[in-house]
Length: 618
Image (cartoon, rainbow, N blue to C red; front, side, top):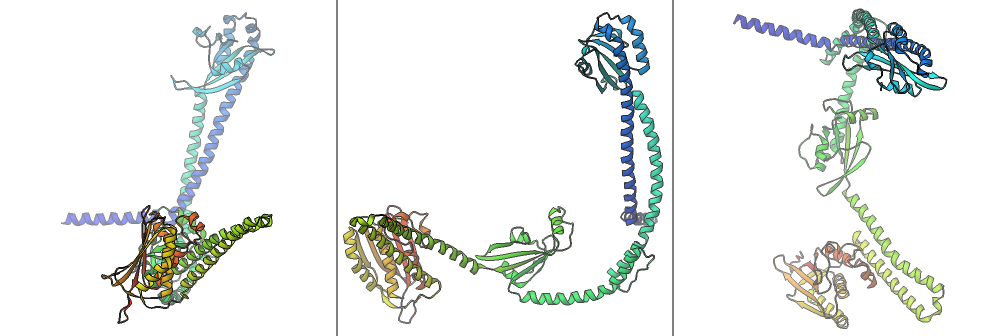
């Protein structure tokens, strides 16, 4: 047990010592020393690198210049014998030995074809051709040199070759191959001396850095100790001012901050209470997040718009909304069939925002955050969209008849008025287009009244049999002339609650459309019945005409929508008839549907509320 207790004490001691060592490494003093030493090391590296490079270049260049001068002297000596091909290697060998000993290099004399005539190296090379790049360059008139490594020995050699000239003619070349080992040994010795001096300087710099760091960080340590006491809630602490320099000013400012911080915290609490009261009563949704987009504050209006019942503190807002929002822009989001406008404001500077976008570490923090303001703009959005679509459609529909009328007027002005038949034809077309514009404007005005809830619907009990008999009387002759069979059937008589004129207008629009698109010998059926399961009247108009494609069927009640645009305009249609039908049926609290199959016909079904003696007109 005693051994266990000692081991535990030893572990605790080492653990505390490790913490102190870690804290020391993280201190400002240690960082100042490290920065100071790094600057010195950087300067030493910079100076040392420059010194070594300069030294290396100096020795190599001097060696190359010396060998170049010797090669030039030798080239001048052997130029005449080489050019006259009276070259005797035995006579020139002493000279080559002298040059070789002086420069410690192997010397080669070559003719204009690169054949070795004499050499201070291996005599077996006589008569062989050298193909070094330096020799090739010298034989074309260039003085070339290169330092290369012998692959067999690993030693560096300087290869230098110059041309042998007689006037402007090149008659051969002189090549020197000098080992560089002696030069590099000298350079290495100098580098060792330089490194030793640098190491001694570094040791002295470490001592000096420690003294400077202690001088700078001593007062900062006192400020830190006082700040910890303030963080614990003790605002009566004061920092001792040691000097009148920048650190002394820091201590004085810190003491001033201590006295003001207490008042600032009290003001912050009061402002927080006010802000909370305002946000709770706001109709717009407000969400505050931290720089990582995590929710810090959310008011009841925002929770209602997002469809949540519990606070979402700590939840990432971009995950909740499905995308990331950029400050300074307005976004629109659909939520439960509602359109919500979202504006984002950054509570940090533009520079801090750029830094935030570059951060990859989620744990990294930046002061600031974001405020999201949310507003339900469903009604405004739908109204604006309808207004834009309405203006575009009206402009398009009015442009066609106006263009036609203007074209015919110009034709009449240019002489067509002289031809009576043509002029009457033009006037007839203009009259029809004017009637079409009149109908279009009348339909538009009626739709506008429906939109603004100004269209008067005079509801009363109406017998459907009377309405269908009226339709039969009105269209029987028209259908007969068109060769179309028109049938009216009332399976079960019923009384509906509605406006007689408006319901007749609905049937007029539907039956007239059926007549336009039903061919000769086809039929149109107008049937009335009662659905006992829902206690509503059902009126169906069925034709055996051309039918409507499935892709167009969902849009036939839209304003200005035409399945066959060219034929519809030719028949005088405005594209608003079925839209008016839907508005009138809707105003009667009814429904209208369409079923169709291309080549077989179309059925328009209207469902209207029944009238009962108790006044129930569901």
